[in-house]
Length: 269
Image 1: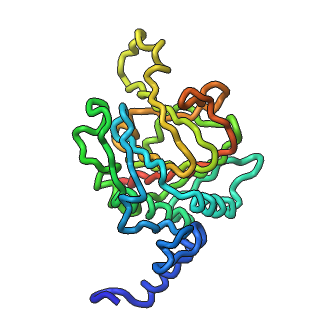
Image 2 (image 1 turned 120 degrees about the vertical axis):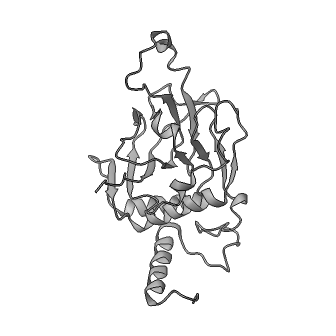
Image 3 (image 1 turned 90 degrees about the vertical axis):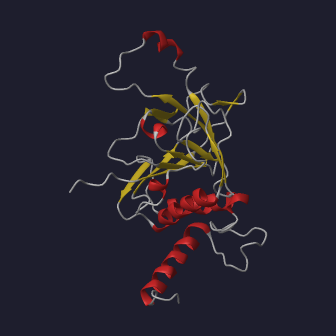
């Protein structure tokens, strides 16, 4: 036990955390973490630069992508944990939770923080269009170390062809939003939001498609939005025929699940 702290309560909390990890991501231990096929979200702890690689998306300040956030077996266990919640049916494809999140979501949040802290961040893209005046970190420190990190989640289950309209998340949510993609791959498009009070530039209305920034979301990927990306850019997923294109080919559409994690803005009271 560390000097000055610890006790029975700490042991119970740690036991609960380990149980949550096993529920969502499978069994692991210090001895088998390096074994082939080990399935722990903490695999690579202390060696994150070898596991997680962050890429700043050119053209959208504050938008970062970790394409290989979750291994395939971790994705399967996360999906199983979500399905055990019993949220989805033919009539309901979305579930929201506020405040105390399910144990698997708390552990997922912790894993996101770890990936940010120890992952390898690459901001070596077009310097004029991305985070040239920021340190190479996917999330500002004041957001990274807030408590709780996230206290609201949305889980969505999309049928083939279903997506989301272009939008900026409500202002009731704080800066710093994370989106984990599971199952079917897709392309999320970002486009600049019209600023309130700004005069409409009619000369640009015919160029909306060309100014969209596409981001490929493979299964297990993680997107982080903060600053401009969170407040000044809309994001959308249009899964209608002919729209989901990547590398000159149309993506095959299947069921897709996503988990969005956000933090509610603190009440002034």
